[in-house]
Structures are given as structure tokens and as C-alpha cells.
Length: 330
Image 1: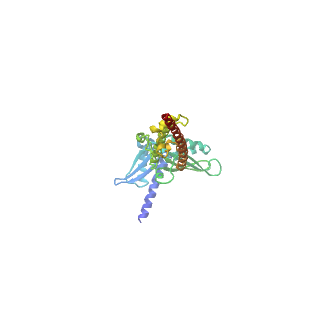
Image 2: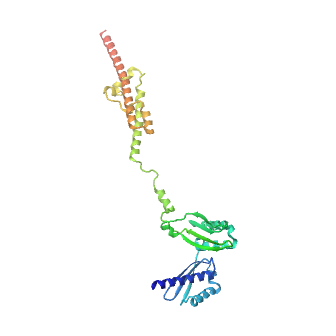
Image 3: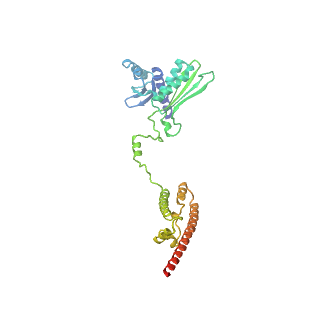
């Protein structure tokens, strides 16, 4: 029989709440809670207009207390008033205000009423708001209108932070249903990231130069090596000119500038004349196989030219030796 007692108790609570709301008037009370204590019953009324609820010198409170004792058989009811600081974030108060505006002005200007209230809520700092008006608003057929602005969670844990309420407005064309959902700025959204001064300070502490990847470092050092080799090749080419005097060539061979020919060693890619072109190709991202192939071809061409130069210098040297021997005999 505990179930019947529980149902009877909830019916009594519902009757108390409806009587207080109807007695005080629409748009004054947001929520009403009843707590049972050893001393008596505690009724908490949440309202944005505590002065109208209390009345002059507490007349309305004393009248409500008397009715609760006689009609609803409460032993020691105690009414407590709790003020709502920002009524624009309370969904029930907003729904009641829209209903009263429709009853007073009429349902022809329902869009003006809805958009104005939506703008007030968003300007107050709400994260999101949704208004739904259903009924015979512009025509004889019932229709549902939806007015939305901002960010509103529909599912998940943050959706519990949304304040929802509904109200009804009695107009000439019929009853209009109003549903309101508001997400206040104090709502806990777990996937939201706030960039405050602390986060900005951490971002400023991060160094601008991030450590480069090993591949990029390797490429950078290779570019430096190619540039250095290109510089050396230019210096050698300026000294060893094909059209220069033969005596200078022999002197360069003796001093070791053209030592590569005497040692019969391979020409390095850095000493080739195409080093500048290879450097540009490396920067543009040419494959390594193509670079190796071009280096090999340049190396062979360079070797042939150097062989011709050496042969010519050796022939000239022999002729000079023969002339010297002839002069010595004379």
C-alpha cells in the first residue's frame, strides 16, 4: 500500500503548486519545491518579483499559509521566497512572458514577439536559445514555428544543462503552445576550449623555431656542401682556362692545381662545371637517380677535356726538350 500513499502525496503536491501559481498569477513564479522537515512543511518559491509575491506587509504570504492549513491540511507550512537574479535565463519565466504577450497583443504579431525575446536573451549572454510556437498563428491551420540562435546541445551530458519549459497562451483563434530551451553561460560544456590569458601566455612561451626533421637537416647540409663545392669549382675554372697559355698549364700541373690528371683519379661531382645546375635541381626536388646519372655524364665529359689538355701540354713539353737538346749540342 506504499504505492497508493506515494501517489496520493504527489497529487496533493501538484494541487498545492497549481493553486499557488494560479493565485499569484502567471509570469511571477518559475519553480515551486516542497520539502518535508520535522518542524513542518517548507515551500520554496522561485520568482523574479519577490515584492509582488510577498505583498504589502506580507499579506499574500499570510493568506497562502492560512489556505494551506485549512484546505490542504498542512500542519505547519513555511513559505520561503528565493529571488531569480537574471529572469532571461529562466525558461519558465520566458515562456510565460511570451504567452502573456500573445494574449495581450494577439497572434498576428507573433514573429515580432518571438524575435524580440530571442534577441534579448542572446544579448544578455546566453550561449543558445530555441523558441517553438505551435497553433493557429497566421492562418486557420495549426503550424509550428521555430526560432533559434546560438549554440544548443541536443544530446549527451551537456544537454542536461539546458533549461526547458513550456506554457500555453489562450488567444481568440485558440490555444497556442510555447516551448522554450535556454543554455545559460554558466552551463558546463566538456568539449569547450576557453582561450584565456593563461593559455595565451603558454602559447607565447613556445619558441618560434621548431626543431627541424632529420631529413630536412640532411637536405640543408647537402645544399651547403654543394654551394661550397661550386665555389671551389669556380676558382679552379678561373685558373685552368682552356684558351690560356700552355706555359701556365704546365706550371699549374707542376704546382698541383691540376693534380687530378697526374693521379688519374676520378673527377668529383663538386669539381664539375654543372654543380650550379645540380644545386638548383636539388632545391626543386629532382630524384637522386637522375642527379647521379647527370653527374656521371658530366664527369666523363670533363675527363675527356682534361685528357686533351694534358696531351697537348705533354707534346709541347717534348718539343721544348728537343729544342733545348739541339741548342746544347750547338
